[in-house]
Image (cartoon, rainbow, N blue to C red; front, top):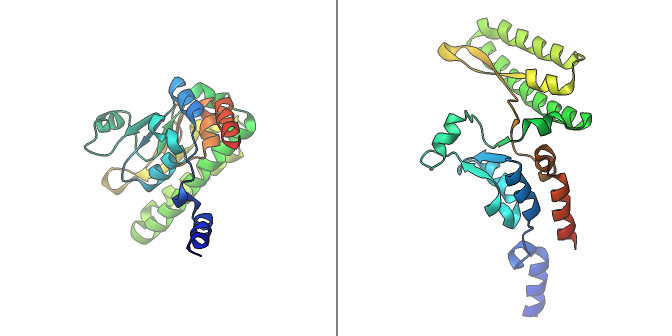
Length: 209
C-alpha cells in the first residue's frame, strides 16, 4: 500500500520525483556567439522566471548581474540599463526579421507604451492636471505613428514611452535602441531575435528524443 501511494505521489509531483530539467546548449552557445546577452537582477522575479526557462543550461547563458554590489553593476549602469530583464540582440538581426515577426515585436512594445500612457493619464489627472494635455498629445503622437505607412522596423525605432522627468515633468525615451528589447520573452522569440532559431530547434528535437 505504501508503495502504491508513493507511485501515485510521484505521478502528481513529477518535478519533485526527479524529472530532468531541459537543456538548451545549442541555443546558449549561439547566443554567446552572436553576442546576445540578458541583463537582470537577483531580486527581479521576471528575471528569475526568464532564467528558469533555460533549464540546466542557465549556467551557460550570457548574463549580466546588475544588482547593486555585483561585480557587473557598473557595466549595467554604463550601458544605461533601466529595467529588468533587458535583452541585447544584434540590431542587424532584428532589422532583418520577417515582417510578421517585426510587427509582433512592435505590437508587444506598443502595448506597454499604451499601458504606461494610461497610468500617467490617471496619475496626472489626480495630481497634476496641467500635464494632462501633454499626455494626450503624446497619445495622439503614438497613434499617428501606428497608423503611418512607414516600415515596421522604423516604427519600432521611432516608438517612445513616457517616463518621469526632472522637477515632476514627463519626458519621452526610446522604447527600442540598437537591438535592446525589454521584458521576459519566450525562448522561441529570444532565439529568433538572436539569429539562433536553428539551434533552438535542434535543442527542442533533442529534448523530444
